[in-house]
Image (cartoon, rainbow, N blue to C red; front, side, top):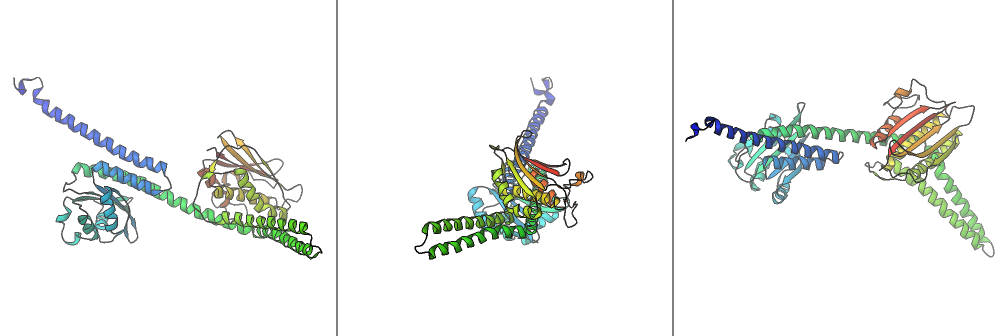
Length: 438
């Protein structure tokens, strides 16, 4: 009995071949989706640090196309900057020291990026003429044979290139080139979104820093008073100590007490300077477990003189045993600084009634965490201003820029919380924000 005598024998081989091709195609698609998933996971786990995302893209590219080494270059004004390399450790170590950090305009990498088409070179050693640039020399010396350069671009803008290399003269197949092209396009979108998010956060950090400096500038007189008080007290105690030493015999007990007071006042002045420094200093965001009550007290100490000057009575009511919160101490202090200064200024024009500022912390139930409230007895909030209160550049102050509350909301939301404002009866305003528990 031959093949054609079998039922359906004439189609048996094509069917088997088709099924095998289908399985291969499914395997490739699964590998491609796994590669993209790995990149997205890296973005989720490291939203502010690009290096783990670079590494995830290159690790996925290595597996996807069975490459020995993969490099990533990102576009900048003068060329393509080498930012990451993955693969065989010995080969990577050699290439890092051999490859030019910047592929200048006119290089093979740059020309490929400009062409917007993948460049497949089955045998680097066979290249001639203009293709033999510094990158080519480094690749050949390191044992590169086959290479594939894929440009990364989004909305007609060149983002960079990914280069895959093999140490054997084993060309990349059309299927691998197509498969990697799709992966590279998706990786570019993820990479560009992360890069723009990082740029946005850097700009936001710059703006927040400028806002802190401006707010501290408004409090210059109060801060000077806060520093001058302990310095003046220390001088008074020093003068007293000298008088006690002039007595016959010297009153050493009084001298010792005066010196102890001098030390305490010097520490007070130093604490004020440290608090000012920590708020004004430009530092990267850093989340840590923070005692919110203590952090708020540091801000109230800086604003106490401003409150006294405006005739405002400041009081606090802090809950004990607050849930653990993980936050950036300086950023949360900036929120408090803005809210307290705004509250003090809002009561500056109050002629009748008490000017009272009350700051409290309580345990928040929904979401679980801490709720911080700042309540004043100023003129209150106009109903028409409430929908726009946290919008950038919206302000009710003639001299205001309208950025303070917008920045405060961004900071609170970046910590997973919510900032809100309501009017109070018979007058005044209540600003409160929540920070979720760690």
